[in-house]
Length: 151
Image 1 (tube, rainbow, N blue to C red):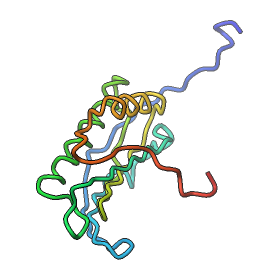
Image 2 (tube, helix red, strand yellow; image 1 turned 135 degrees about the horizontal axis):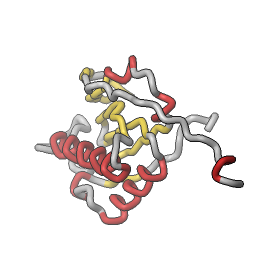
Image 3 (cartoon, rainbow, N blue to C red; image 1 turned 90 degrees about the horizontal axis):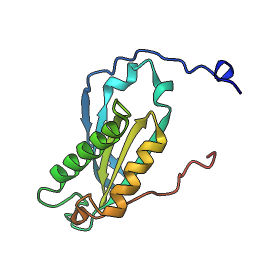
């Protein structure tokens, strides 16, 4: 295939919306939860450019009786999320991850981003897990199977 026959990549200009958050406190499986949602993505028009969802789960061992992190645990989780998102974006040199939500309950934090380049995000996540560069005192970090039976 000559260079004139290669498929053209479509380039579009995308304005990433300024993040806007809502905090809710639902009950999940009988446990109090804290959920932070980025509401600015509701009207985001270029979802196809960030077609991948990346969800990570962090089990933390040091939890209050109600299942929430002890002491400064919530702050440390927030800092971890910000650091990881920064690494996703720096690895690509432009926005690669859009924060969707974070939910903490029953000794677990679930974090989801919309991702542009899934290969780069996977590399960053694998390096983070292998290096244990995520404050292991927060707990265990890793992937879990998708509960969606449709794939």
